[in-house]
Length: 151
Image (tube, rainbow, N blue to C red):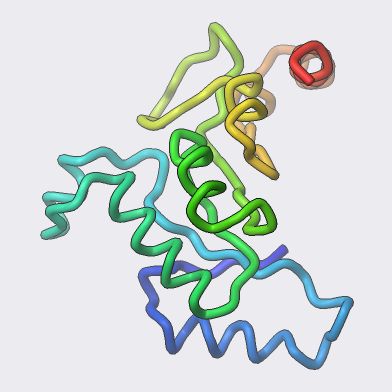
């Protein structure tokens, strides 16, 4: 999987897609980052954006799909809508996944792994709750078990 930032625009995303053509079926998934899960509306206002994070992420996701990329990095809070609008094959990679009881840290738009699975995400990014755990392996086992129960 390779990612670019959707705010780089259509020319950049199209060039990235074209760069992977020689790899054929062996090409990695190409996804674009929309709005960081650590951002909220006030952060976008600071950047001169008047859209909500969800609306801006959807605008970037639409451009991403138009450019022929495989999916986006977005908040799991946008997953249900994005699957409806962009289809089940459009891949969603979702940071900001926090197991129940975990600290949110700098993340603003978060979900638990179970909620994210139910929302239809394809790939969950679960960083600090695992890497900063006293027992990362046990934390992963607990997350996997909770996902198995939810499936």
